[in-house]
Length: 368
Image 1: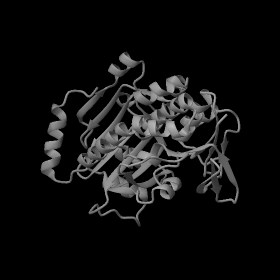
Image 2: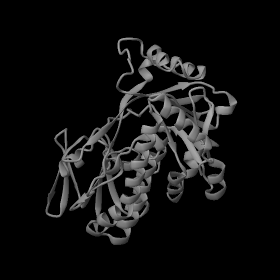
Image 3: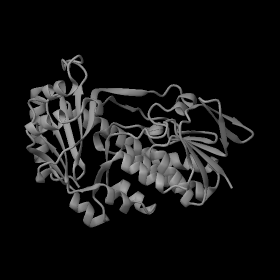
């Protein structure tokens, strides 16, 4: 029986391991983070991810631990609606809408679905090599592991991708993002909705991931925002969003600065080839996208099911990997392009363009 290795124990890597094990295959996951370092952010899973998780028997657990949503709404700075996503339509048609939950809760659900001891933590892959039809992964601690094939699910800054395809690199969007979690009870009208407020060169989103916990993110254009990095972080973010609705300042001010994560929004351009010999890229390693459509984790979960199905059918990476790229790449390329465009539109700085954008959004029918 083939033995597979997965580099990266995030959502994509864990989902792939689950799908492979359910297909009767042997797999090990190697994750660079030590035990106990669970990410302190929220995540939103759309209907496509939930339908895929349903095939793995996990959708009900995700819905139970998360907050099932009735709407995904884009608003202006004052939280007045610009557009709405008709989630009850998806619920009626597919049995699922969208779910917001704590990322740590999702990862626990995925871990619990795996055979015991599938995941090895604190294993930072530094290099992969091929020898005698085996793939060898070498780790920072001096150890190594081998398998019949290797799936790289090690994220946007993938070590494996950099080795195989050094010309492919992450690209910035010109936007900085701060993410936070806090205990907070939202007004009733927001308790089953994800909100993203678009301003001028900035936006703010929030969604309840538990009945008493809100996940939020604040995004600014990098240039010309006069951000004072020497000031108290929550006070400075509140100042940056002082023209937005008062609720937004409450969410920012109520979050401890040490609980706020800062990052630059990035993606990668289309990768011409996802595989080489017995090694294949997946998830963000193959098609990292901006979070503007909330599809990064969703597409990684779709990857997981597709890869497991193809390997089960062919029992040959030389057949499965090209088929996987052919099946998945057109979709992920499209979503990556669209996500980047939406992010750019949300951050218009011209007053004229912002006004035209907002008027256009109001004329669109509810998105399905």
